[in-house]
Image 1: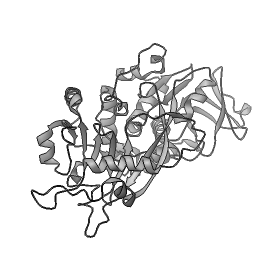
Image 2: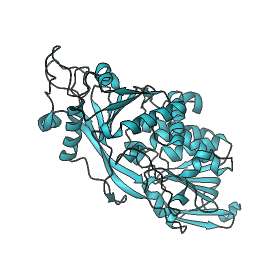
Image 3: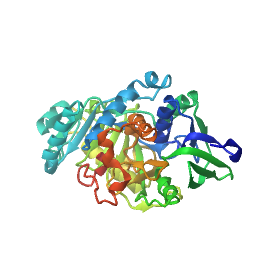
Image 4: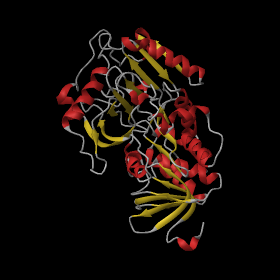
Length: 424
């Protein structure tokens, strides 16, 4: 590759995007000894990654993703050992996943398959849920079964991404922040990237991991990826503010605070515990497509109220004394406003089946995108699989079904539960 013809970087592998997927791939490529250059339009973790809830669970209906998530949780728990330093901020809380009567059989099948895959889960019927997690209201039968995963938890998306970036740099990778790739051209033996500052960079192989900005870049190569952006919100619900309230008695935490991460499929939301006893809340269902070039609107009052009320109905707080009804102080619209502690909105890059799009799209270009809101928890180990693709290693057979060709072949993946396909 002739250096004299390049005004910018020359590298064996280029990566567009320094979210957690691009950062993980950069690390895994650099540790293999490859010369890596990363191009990021903003700052690492400055896009959707940095606004992720950071939930880590292996509760997946897709076997390959379940294995990757399982291994990624183990990676995050020992992040410094794998990367040579840094801390992903992983906190193991356990996870509880609630399903309605129409999903009992599917939940049992999923749990059995996960056990076969080495994921430690168990199913709980209604009586067992109440016994072990008395702060949870089953909603008059709206919850019929739960799946418990002890290894689940959450990690810090910023610290995880920057940990990968730092480790990649220590192994020779170059990261170009605030460097937007404006044009991509595939030439004989190389790929040319022209950045917004007018420089042309040449790489032998290229990975597109630009989240909601991936599809327009692929289109420059004549490849139509059926990805779209969706706006999703995260709401922060603080602990109870009533006199004498503590994190343990917060209506946000409920008596079953040890449930940890809660994914309420029956209620349409998820919740991750916060250190102050509050919760980070988000929805499970799709939203209309949006333009990722337009900043997403902040969390609206009605959006916050819907999430807060759903969470407070499910976890209304403990009885004052045995035999007395649960306290619902702090529930409803008034409580939602009183307990509001913040929130934000961001983008998901969504594929037609809500499953990742991973594979080769031209002779020298690969893609890792379309993670559809559940990509953070996969990134630590999925980056290793992606790096292997770029260097010609034999791929895991389970990775093949996530290739971009599945859309034109009409081979969309079935995953998740009902409209909650984000559960993969």
